[in-house]
Length: 216
Image 1 (tube, rainbow, N blue to C red):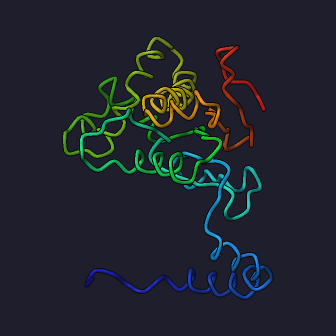
Image 2 (image 1 turned 90 degrees about the vertical axis):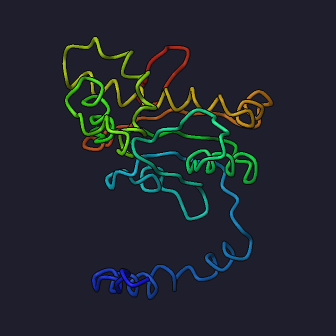
């Protein structure tokens, strides 16, 4: 591949530092992970945003979470049309092959994808309406959530609510997958919706009984 280039020097230095310290001190653990395969308890669907660090939030070790990241932590509806569906494939593998006990959808504050969806839906981002926009077509998944919050006048509150709608829409769409619904109804799988405030370090979970997000 003629366009590939060597790894940047600072990353090479970080790798050698990790290999000489963290890996060297836990060599037996890494060997066990490699030999025994992965057996995560939970799958986490989170945003690609570089500020969202799932393993840090929960103090997780390697091998503990099966993690899938995409723009705005969205899950599309079950759509077996033979096309390419990366998120759906990850959900299928997590549920049917790894048999995770939990799926956690993690939203966050200041989500650029969510803001883009809001702007697109209210006519402020015409470029996202183009059929050629991968981001725009992906954010179409969140349109039902926008319809629920478009009447909120305050922009900050509206975006905050739409970020949480991204979690709820994803939870709703997860239940359209037959293998997810079957596992949930058999009590082999539970679904969880979370939202984290990056600046404050806060974490909220969706409480279906209350119909809202509550602090953890």
